[in-house]
Length: 483
Image 1 (cartoon, rainbow, N blue to C red):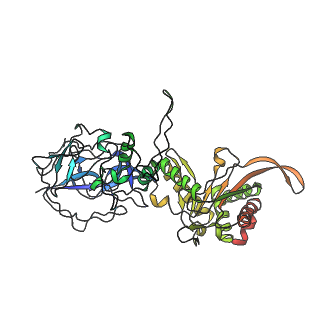
Image 2 (cartoon, one colour; image 1 turned 120 degrees about the vertical axis):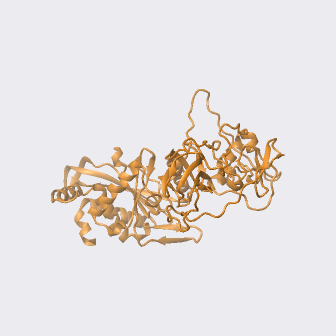
Image 3 (tube, one colour; image 1 turned 90 degrees about the horizontal axis):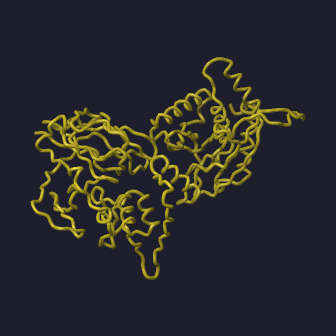
């Protein structure tokens, strides 16, 4: 007998709690193999192809392209015909889940009659006696920002045991009724995973205990809070301490465009905001004569072999500077009130892409020479442009190098990439009048700026690091002392 297995959005690692469906790679009725990619999703860090751990016939998909789903929400169902899945599975294809044999599933019993819920909708019972509003599967499954899509099998007839999910044409409950505050216990855990959902509710004075979650097992999603706000859910407070919600400024009719802060743009906004809130940063800068550095690079490339990039030389200077000033290769453990100095330098570098600003990380940059750094920068830059960076390649940095000179600007005050302690900014290298060996000359000048966490060091340390970097730019032979 065929068995219908449900594949849920797996944990994609690095604390990610949701992902947006970018493109379906399979249709209902397609036959899929074990570990075949079935959907492309975008997280706050990268584009990821999600492989299905089961082989069989796709009987349903959940979520349209552009829909955001929380981790653990159903992605699709697969009918495995006449056999049980391999007990050993196919391995851990993504962080947090593998293709091990699934637990035995109990048959759901559809109630012939249903009770009317407090929101005026029909409720049905599942095999455990739980109830769910009409139009939502009894196991609590729901799709965020849209109704669940359940395509009828078009190419291969679904097995008789497969239960068709709710039709996409079913009229959904209105946002006001679907997420209206209801009486809820005042004690016990609140079914919320995402800290962003908690923050949204807290900032707008919405009591999460009064909301009915539309996610799996009653999980409260961002859409539930937004629906409650649209429905006019009043902030919950006490007479002594009323909760005040700041009014939303109306947008003039005929003008203004609302752009959701999600995906990479949302992740950048959250991280930079957190950096500004938590890190007392300061910035110092200096102009440097980069003429000799440019000549040294030209000589290296003229000698044959792989070309050396300017970014690689700057990275090599940074790692040498961090060896002298390890305070800047650290982070602050706020809970323990300790500064943690790190032994390895994992160097992040800012890369602008069509999807927004990303910061790929070169692992163990301190152990690489200029040639190795050049190759790794090129590989990660190409992956950033094509959207194939993995979450592991976008996290774990200890110091960031930001070459904003490629945008034709001279200076900037970089925002530290939280939780790092410092970022070096490099402006454009342009011919300028410069006093060289006592005479006025035209030299290749660059402005260097260092933004640092004032908790980990004082201005003397930051200034010492920046001066060392400038000295190496002006006289590359200084690096020979550390090679």
